[in-house]
Length: 277
Image (cartoon, rainbow, N blue to C red; front, side):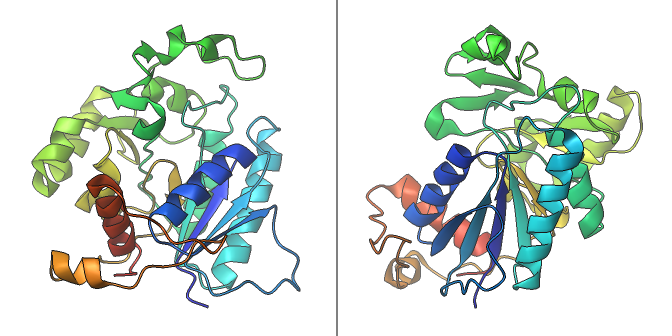
């Protein structure tokens, strides 16, 4: 099996969003509800999305489920495990984003855990560490009155810090835009800006942050958290080579359309980052 990417989702609908995004960008993807039975033979796929309903359960239950899924996926060859969280960061001061992220990082031996909750396609963007729902800050959106996880703080550095044992800081988007050198220089400033000194968990903003060189050196990255280092990207040598590359078939047998440049470039970045190109 050529399984390269395993995703653990804290919610069924979020899992479906992610599986759809992976399929549209050319990855052969299967979504499961919970951990598949041992006897289930998976087809030849590039990615698996294991969907749970653990967003609002006690933290210890969420941690146990995520670790079990990570064990299942890595035992089947997945070199990269991603934790898919809600694009509105649904959680309380008890978790579950912080506890699960830290448990997965500990399992992988990771020190740095980038977290990127932005999802521009659905209007979720992050500016200076603050999450916006459309044009409205999270704390002013309808999510402030969520019956299970009321979100009344738009500053995700503060939100994540309250539910994490590790210190949490911010790598601003302008540093990401300036490239690897600027990102590499960010941690000391982050350390001075917060009460605890270790830059273990930068919250990165913007669409491009997950693909940054610093993120590739960390144990986790992307619009949710990933457990395990990204392999060195094997970029295609030319645009013509990318265009000529065989397209994967989605889980329902259709082929991704690649109808716009953004979708095609996203597919290329995904394949480069997990070693498919």
